Image (cartoon, rainbow, N blue to C red; front, side, top):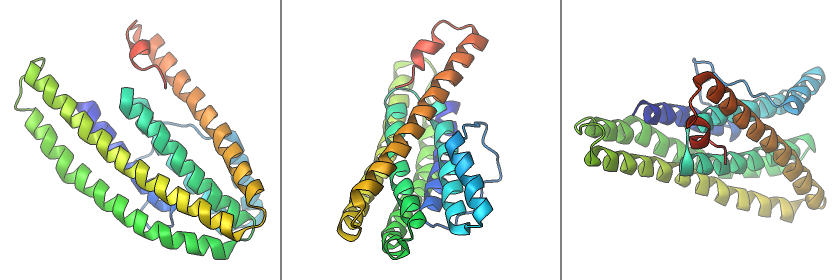
Length: 240
């Protein structure tokens, strides 16, 4: 049961990081992530931007790093359909965030401003849903679960219903992001003559970044398997 609460807490951090991607003013989490998955090209790019003192670009790149770190932590604790959906969510937000960064780097500040107006509504909806689920819905569900004796059919059935609720919550965020991503792509296509190059470059960066994160997930789970000496662990946590 603890892993459900852990994932709920980390998803809250992930939503906060996603909010910062969209220009939100959320506070930095006081607890440091236990996962260190900084993608080397991102680290190099941050250093280059800092040398040029491009504060807006530095913030955009660092927000991508923070969001990915929190999402990786959630994925490491998830299994099955939840792990798959988190991976899809991570991809969607990376596409949106990287396109925004590319627009900033190419000086399309007017388009970024128009896009960020769309972000405001999205951020508000996602944050409200996340707060409601993590502070009220999930704790109530977990308290109800404690009324059942472990290993009983009733306990197992109710646990599956909680996992289904959590999956629906993640799907809600993913679908919202996907819709905004489509609107953002349409705005780019209608506003920039070199749109094909920007979109292709964005896709290449995100694909390479996601490959790195997949390798980190696999490495972490292999190390956990070796440490635990549990022959079932690696099978259950096989990355998607």
